[in-house]
Length: 301
Image (cartoon, rainbow, N blue to C red):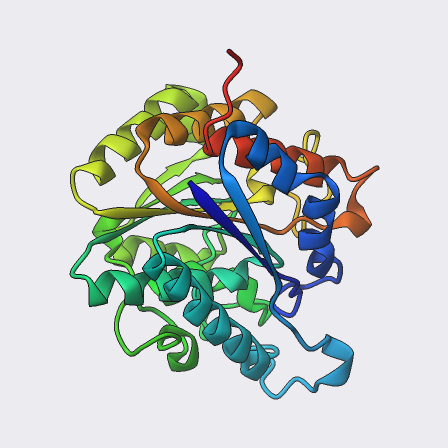
């Protein structure tokens, strides 16, 4: 494949600083070379410029830094659509998870223009399905999945066009283990398939990702995977925006991505929430590059 890397150094959607350095950390960890070693052609498109929080004022405490997040995600949506039109594979490096609004909106507009069905696998410790009415923090990185499913602030829902970006029947949430009380109602309302860490404990990561891939492969034409590094247990990936204990193990994370690679149905990928400030010797970024490589076809033999 022709893989085109896009960095989005944004931490405006998060509650703490640092994930804006995630794209640089993954580049330092050698992401481009790892992908080339698999046999793909790689082009690094650089970063989308993002204003730092110190240069802005918060206009709405329930939607912090909304104007700049909308601006950046709109640029990202346009970029993703262009990459898909060129027949290339977009790899987006975050940045906090609010960037997914732009990534998925660009993919959705491409799919809409070509009469294709877009599928989504969202791998995350959090549901990211708050809205301005339910958020306890006002941090937009807790809202992107709701936005692309058509729930929440109009400014976020309409990035890339005034239409629902993903049909909830064509999406799956994997690895969730912390959901705000009011957020649970939104998850249930949308009808999205979700698999908690309890489900992974009971049934195993292989059975769950195999089921998700089988279900989606029968229903969609293109498939995006959005991987939040906090889905992995902090003992493995401690340098993340919002760490939560009890996550995916080292091998479970690789197994999920290896199964996605074997499916050969993934057409785009993003990895978010690497926070070097909270990391040790760039270990989380190193692990992020490993699982990206697994998703893009790296094998033991």
